[in-house]
Image (cartoon, rainbow over all chains, first blue to last red):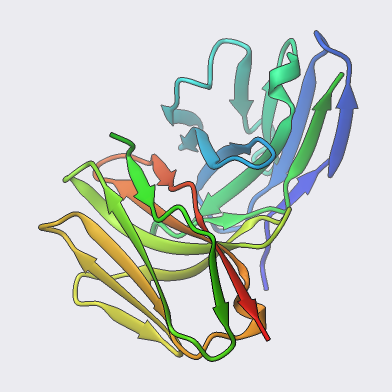
Length: 112
Length: 110
């Protein structure tokens, strides 16, 4: 069964450092998403990406966040200068257009 | 008002019980509706889409009431393996933003 692959599974970083989280979507999917889940809290929408550009973003997705798909396969989320409150599980999700989202296993980010 | 609201839970039920979860959404223009399941510290997984006419998948039945902006999920004959958090999910019309409810925790006990 096709799946979404995320790396790294866990990253520990110092406050102020840059972090890049990577996602390999299901091959024929065209819609890509990043979500965040702080431990014990709800799954929060960050951004959606379609046709090589951001289609929608939330208030959480401020200037310190960026997304790109540099090589046509990997879909990345960059956090420029991490803060303690960025500690969370970050999920990549992709969709073929029917609205159903398929999630990767997540990247756990710990900011110290 | 929250965009997607769910029963707070947790629901504690014995094996074999029938349990129902409710969800309301605030955007009347919402287009697509889903139920996801999330196990502890795992990613959300699609359980089922919710169609206007209602739909069933084995022991699971989903209903949509657009007039009341209300979605439900019924689980019959609960199994231990049904223990999880159930997430109500709404996608808005014309956009890509898919919003998750906070989830309802279900514990099924032997």
